Length: 100
Image (tube, rainbow, N blue to C red; front, side):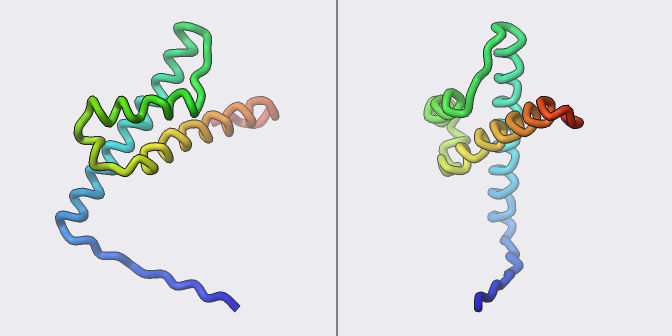
């Protein structure tokens, strides 16, 4: 028999500020990755994949110092979420379902 426990966390004000900052930076990265995919298709007619975008993360962390404080796996997960959203969109379009 397995038991599951839920714990409510109450972050301190500095922790809450750091979490908000991380969320804001992840949101910016998500929107930038999404825009990169849209622009690549509109301008060059090519698609940008997960691994291609993931390859740029070390450069982003080197050029933008605020991203150095975010763990690399968190940033990779943001790129993975963009990829999953695109895969789901095109899967629904192919199946004839509502894409949005």
